[in-house]
Image (tube, rainbow, N blue to C red; front, top):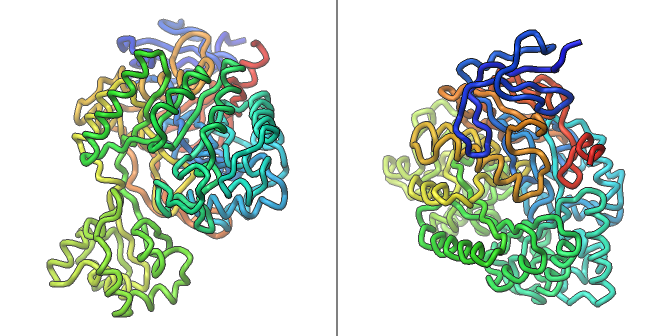
Length: 577
């Protein structure tokens, strides 16, 4: 009988712990790394030739919304085809448990609004064989997975369960009894395997009429704030107390406007890592980010575990007007995803509508400048001359306002023009700033969300190919520490994130010189007869999850060796703990 299941032989090992790279072998047995260094030949059932390839820990993505996608896509595309071996689900306070039957439809509608997941896809795939949070984890456990999952419990479903939908959204304070129920729910969830809790806190405590800091894009299905947007700091303190009592867990908060003293208080009460969401690598936000970095440093000096997660990738948003909601409320009102197709075409042709669109700023927030939108594909042959040009360039060429240029193009293409445009105003200076801080976690793929125009699960591929290989912003050793070991430490992953003997064998083996990611492209494979944008990785010779090969030469092997990591541990880890 062979001593090992697999030996990865002769690769350049970058172990994720910031140790210098070295050439060596990695032997795997029963899903774990059994030996590293030199392994005699003839001792394994399978040998993988890694000569000239990098061998490193699989990437860990702390910010995804694969809560529904796990039930129909074992590879959690785009993440699973770009070297990601573990993800955290349940971010931003959103989730599907605990959930009474009468609230299921509303929960799916909320995710359609805030995370742009097609309702038809959710309705076609959600098994809804649960009510409680532990029951939902059991359902996820049963689903085939090629990637590991670690789950948060979102604050919103807890608030709705305890207070009812209307009261949870009213902004009233929970009673002492309700607060005790919230704490019991959190204990129950963590007993079942939750890694902590998450929240979006963008509004004003107790005031559902106040505009959220995130604007309309983050509001609920009916335009009102999410329950967590109007909850009180006392509720956050109560949830932090649970983590302090247990001595485990971590927290993700999208709450940039929350007073910093409250962040510090919560970190002190809980003793847990807090992930501050999110820092775009924006050239316009360099001064603000420097101020945040200084605060993070003061927190570390106090022993408080507050980390930032950066948007350190710049894949283009690829969109059509079949589904687009990021150019502000005026555009969305006339051309958004809720507007019927025929009505959209009529609106684009209507001079009165165009006049209202011209009155809007060309740029909304930091995302998706209209004149920077580049024509990606066209339907009409007469429009082929515009492919690769921006709307600003086309408008100048034709002597038109950018709004008229884009409206004429979309009408002549019968709504089938596709565009590519920047996500935020990410630039090299902003990237150097975020990646230059060793305590900023890269990534924030938002995987599983915004499926009609975003495929950012390629963030780790981009970081290595662009910001290590091309721009030398980071060393390879630092990059792998940031992509695997640091997020594993913050999120409570047990025995993952580094290559060492005894650790789980979540491993990427890739061709450094040829590592790349595809230009995002449309595929019509969503349940419910819907489409999405995907971006596959290139140069991944092998990806192993729990010691089994899930990707070989960039292609799925259809081996589903991923696990639900309850409390950060896989089944074998829990059995031996």
